[in-house]
Length: 191
Image 1 (cartoon, rainbow, N blue to C red):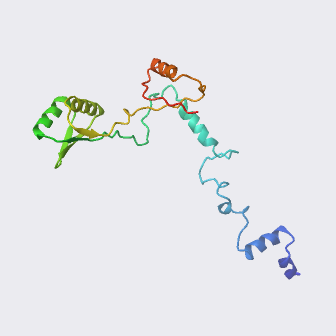
Image 2: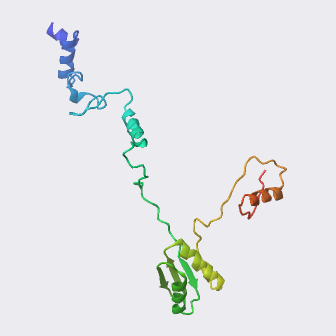
Image 3: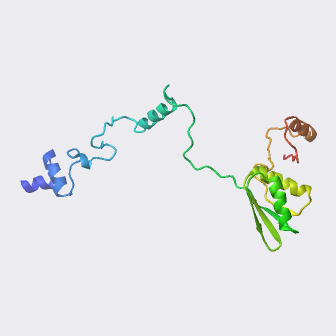
């Protein structure tokens, strides 16, 4: 009869024994360590079981977004990394004398600069966008041969206007954009 009970467990005690001995595992209801991780509460915690496990996070965000009267309402600095503005170098060709260039830059620049002389050109590295604009303007006025990359803030903006009728006049569109203060370089009608 015992062999029959082991082979075909009928009651819950026999089933637990069968699972423990034959399958090598315990019942999950009896030991909290064997319970699923979501069902376990850490020892000593004051966690409240909720239907939505992310509700605690939502409540914390609601509390943060509504500061109390005694708390400061000034914006905090973001914890993310700040993007550093990269100013492109100016490559000056056919430099006659290094001394003249240094005097011009000291006269016009408001912050520090670096000049790296090369065999046939000089590389000017500036630290502020204002100095970059001043120096490129000065070099253009004096008709000195140089090349550089444009700042991202100076790059031309391009727009696509959707929903215009096919028979719209390009001259009328140009006038409307000029009234809005947008510089118009080229208009292409795509049909």
